[in-house]
Length: 150
Image 1 (cartoon, helix red, strand yellow):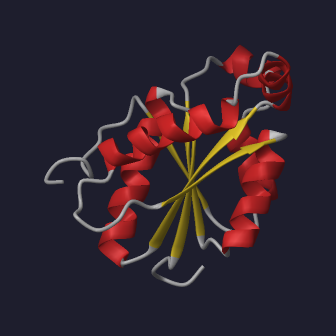
Image 2: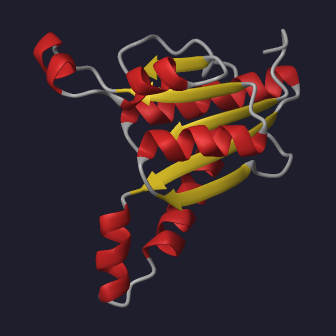
């Protein structure tokens, strides 16, 4: 990664931690003049079930994602590019980061106990192991100084 990122990918899940991650990514993008892209990964089984029921889950999720982005993007310039893609979460994030030529991936991480961390391979841990670019992990428990003054 160059000293200042040119493209930042924020992968969100609508959790409190991912809202913090999105706010951090938006702040970084604004500070460095970077292109911000926001990604939500949908479970392929949910997509199939929704399709079976005649419900366009991807479009509905995209509308909700746009609303989330608008809340985190107070600047007057246009909203960042957003993606809603179905598939295995880590693979989709890595593929999207590669395709977007992202210099930085920003994700949220929910607090987990040591036992939970041992039982579940978290997305953020898998990303840190496999990503070709730096991964910034934000939690909802951390102070949020980058939100002040926005």
